[in-house]
Amino acid sequence: MERKEFLKSIGAGAALAVTFSCLGSCLREELDPTAGEDTSSDSNSSSTNSVPFTVDLSASEAGKLQNNGGYIIKNNIVIAKNLEGKYVAATVICSHEYKKKVVFKNNEFFCGEHDARFDQNGKGLNKNGSKGLKIYTTSINGSILTVSA
Image 1 (cartoon, helix red, strand yellow):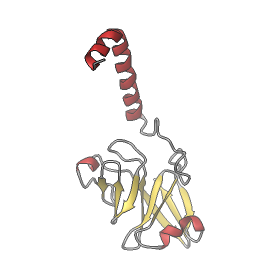
Image 2: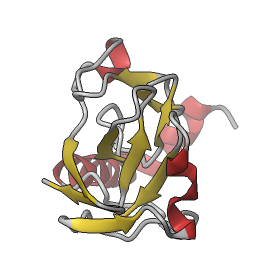
Image 3: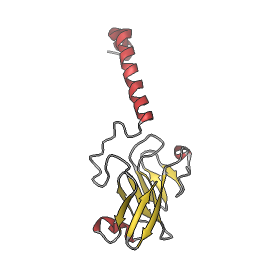
Image 4: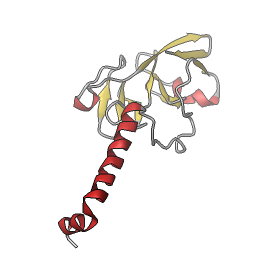
């Protein structure tokens, strides 16, 4: 059966119901960027951006932060040690399509879903990064790194 024939057979009411269902889902995601996201695959992040929080840099969970360019994800926040040795942090949720795909790569925040790129201040570096990225403040006291809003 051709698509046109199928649409005729289900009638305008069903087509309208499907349309409103899809629009409702898009609106929910726009209002709540985390709506519908599956967090089960990322064991290092929780379902909320609860800040402030700390990271013990001497703990095994922070091992990747020992090297410049390394990063970890905790509480839906990407925490990285940039190439200059400073700690930077940003939301893991990309502003392009609100997917939890942001990582730290080549000294910038990067979303592999559609190649959105952001500098360390959250400014978009290409079209898909044009909405910017939420950045968090980092401070260090001894071996304890604090991430705050």
